[in-house]
Length: 233
Length: 343
Image 1 (cartoon, rainbow over the protein chains, first blue to last red):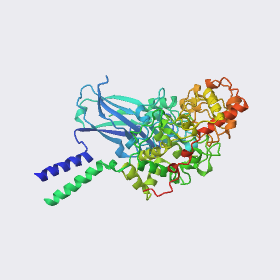
Image 2 (image 1 turned 60 degrees about the vertical axis):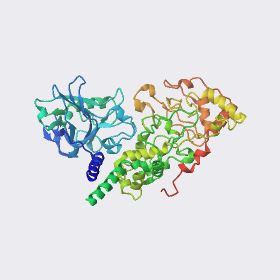
Image 3 (image 1 turned 30 degrees about the vertical axis):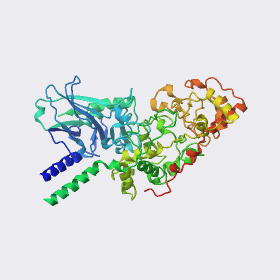
Image 4 (image 1 turned 45 degrees about the vertical axis):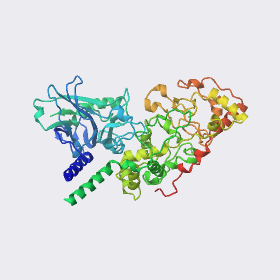
């Protein structure tokens, strides 16, 4: 009896130390693309504006994942922020708990980091400033980082650099998305969100807009455009 | 069965320890001087410990923080000058590159709500990212720095002692640095002892104090000798720098040419003065406020009316400012280069 108690206690402590709840979960998978084909680093693409483009970096923060109705009755499935990095496959899959309600549902999430986290000093995990998604001279997170080259940019090494962010009003670049879920989505184990960068570049004139690295009107406009890349499969 | 029991007991103990590693560090109580406001720094999120403080101190003085291991925080923040860069109008960093501003003093930061001359940094814990990553200061990137520290012989052990983890993160690095700089408290100048009734001003200092209260104290509020606001103090724009100050952060034209009101504690030793270090002496500074103010749209409302101080009164004012020097702070061995072996 004593042994059993001891082994029970051991399991409890194991659970407390490393306990990962493996209850019902659903996976969100993000697939960056260019014109419906999986995005590849340093591959040459032609945009709708006839710009030749290669992508080196594409990362963004994903937060506040919810499923529910639009009128604020959504159920929060995951409170933590995730840094989605297209050079790191594992980062593009996020497991969240299954929602309890499935009627009239919208998939909701945010692109970027909210103001509370942005004024809370040095945070941990995916929000650790060491991941290069934090501004030094003007505190706050970079919500989306998109970098590459294009012959249309008359910049040094033909680079374009978009560091889109800003948490303070009126330049809050956080984007909230609400995407209707398809029928019978609850039978699936995985929801696939496709992010087509061709969409983004179709709205941008790279010869004039190629370097946005501070919060402001330009960053806000880019954040709005970026929002439109996200499509649920 | 006995063996299983033994192993289970051992594991239980081990897991128990993992949960309570914070038991093994030494908490420090942050003492708030009498009649001072409540600190703004949230100590609950970064509880001060002797281990954390000593780690932060070691990091502060260690050039490993810069790209080529040539520059430490102390390169531009020397204790004997209240942790500013003495004798340089604009501070210089890696490869002799020169920045655009004078390094600020580091004192009483537990009471600051934002940092830098333009207030662009919103929390002490993320302040160090700016000099660490600036191309003209330390030119390092945080991820690489964390890797360097992780590979070093001494640091993983010190992080373990301070934060209970040998795995170094950007967060722990920044919090350790904060623990050191937030502890840099200056509250034992002659002025403080006079306020406490332990000493008395000389006649000339007393007269200077009266002049100070009438002309300077709206912005340089006691006891911190700053109100933390941003003001345009009537300096002529240096065309070689075109530094618009606070406006670069807020993008509002109303903030043009405004800079953080610095504390005046230890001002005797923190020369040169102003955001671009344009004045070498306190006499020049007082002269500027007395007769050098340039009028512009954003000029501080407190500076519109000229001070019109006589030469004698200006001398008295400077005499008072010197009572803000805190020898205990400037020479406290606890804040200086860690010569002793850190256990």
